[in-house]
Image 1 (cartoon, one colour):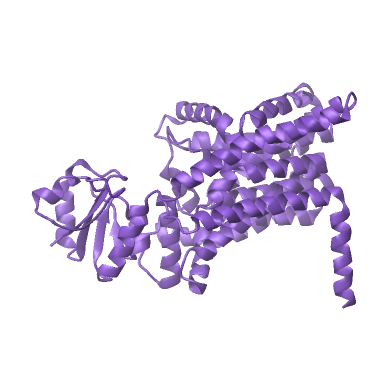
Image 2: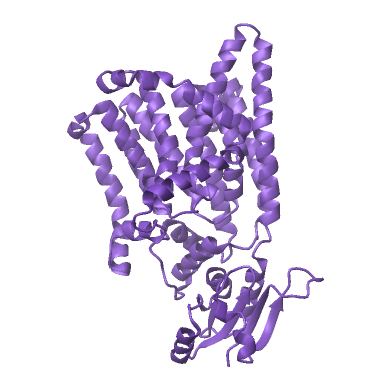
Length: 499
């Protein structure tokens, strides 16, 4: 009882601190918002990538045949497989995503507080909590949000090491970034940022630091089982095999890279909101000493410059690396989600700098400025997140409905061909493959696979030209059709029987 009473007193004392109370309030509001959407869209249909990750999980959990691909890391699927063993629905994986979303908020607060103080940490966590990227991907079974969370905590642990020389923090950072890499390989972009940071601030002195080599060994040991599995499964180094999946064509990396970067920059006003983008620009401008004092950074020891350099690198490297590692037109906003922590901390630091200047003239004007900024920054993000989450909550619903129908009305050994193979395969739990390029190749495939019984055409996923009138030309039997609404006469998905 005494121990319980002491803990209660510690909690009460902690909440009496205004910064702690504010953080707690922000987290409560962020949790309430996420629980609202969780209840609203918790059972929404999975998308293509989600279908692959969850099919991998079901294959692991229930020993279902599945053709693994090197581009899909394993950790999300392994964790989801464990959850499927407990309860064979998406509920627990979605709760896991919700938990990681809230953890990302704690991570950015810790990082912002450690770098620029509690005020910056509180504003940064407020911005992150309302970010539409964070909110939207909280409710998608994808690797982007786990990557963000582990990227953010890795930044915190590594910065804490550089600031305090705590070996324990460095080892925590190595574990965190390794786990983040097992969720999404591009999380390891953080290590490129750290390599540049160490080379600029410590030159080659790091070679003599035993703890850095231990951290490197920890990182490699955690990734080793995955790398060995990759060699056994794909007969190659899985990291490079994954990178080659969406890599630009030979000789196009530079033009594609700049094109992709330009596309991401054009997305910034929506991705971050205009007030945050404006403060990001101001915040980078306030780092002018970093550029003017480059010689001090290279040959001296200036903590302020080191701090700015660290933040700038974890902002730029996720954007640069993804821009130059992907083919043209690969500029989905989720690919640069790991730049969010740096963006929000730079913007928060800028607003605190402006607040400090204005406070000298009028404290109330300064406070009003912060309130106005937060309102103008948060409202459009929340509104956009609300629109996108609700608009897309039923997207690809026909694949879920048709997949469940196939599961209930087909034999386990029967196979399916469709352009939507990840979603259909996930819901039907049948051997499902994508369309073959030519009709001649398809006929050869069909003759060798007598269990191929279902032929699905959908309007939502593109198929090769020959497939659209194949059913009519070969008098296939239509056994089910799905429409966007009751008034629509043209089906959006049709299931045919291959006799």
